[in-house]
Length: 426
Image (cartoon, rainbow, N blue to C red; front, side):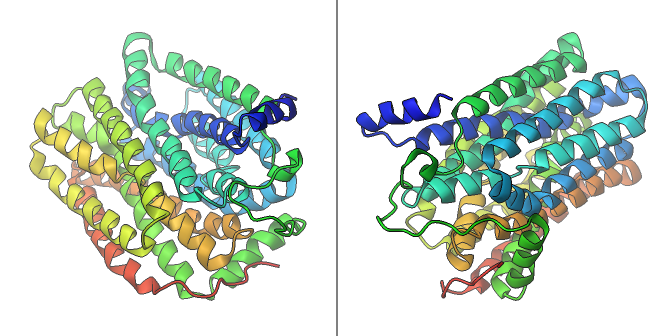
């Protein structure tokens, strides 16, 4: 294992090993996000090759997004019990295996099983709780910045890979794009195996910014009681339900809608697929800036009001989209403003969760809040596909998502000021 000698070498240069852990986590979340986002590029090629309709393919995507979220709280409990490295390696193995098996699929039920259940379960083993776990375990100071970086890796991976996958699909077929993803997953697995450690104490270190004498965390309990106990206690608070509801809307307006259906929407308005995928890449670039910036801001300003502005501006950008006339200029304006806000909501939401429910249980509670995010994503993925099939238009789904974001902006101030942290889970 390279971690111990590397940590010692970095320590002599006054560099904390936590930044290596962040780098490995960033890579793993980046390639996993590429697997999550790939169906948005491959929807139309699958339609052309197999004749499946949008609603059928959207069913598989909705299942994938739903499992990605519903596994979150149990993934947090399993990470606490079995460790980060084991869970991430298991996740990457399942996702890579599901993608490889899909190279031979011929029926829509195989798509649902492989891309819906297998990839959904595999990505859900770590989900967004991985970034929250690493940030809260390895960092006390600069935690918001780290959450921003890791969140950006997830969102940016879903978007930046799309133009490359789209070009590969256009030139060599969708199976070549899947093989590229599998190769990247193998690289991430090797890096995780060599460099990841579960906690700073494994290397005799304290977390960045941690004061001396901080008591060690309690031993992890059984998986199911830990996850359900966190839900039981958190659900008794108004804070949890506001964060759950707003994150439901966050998922509905990002992963479920834009990531899955923006390319087919653009094609409906005569925008070429590769150009539409490039639009998502532009969003990814601005998302990286916006989400890292959001992490920096969340360390310094009231997170409630950050969320108010994020949701409000996202809602306005979605309501603007039909008026862009789908020109290069109009879509570029949308991509910049929406991209800056794509998933900037995550750092403030994680910080609010840690503040209100405590550091050691933050990943469990955030797992349930993230389940709401992916439930919203699944509803939007299926609903937008149904809208396209039944109404011959995606626009009603985009208008509904914009209105929901404005509602989320009004909900966030109801959180109230920070109070005494709740005791969550036993």
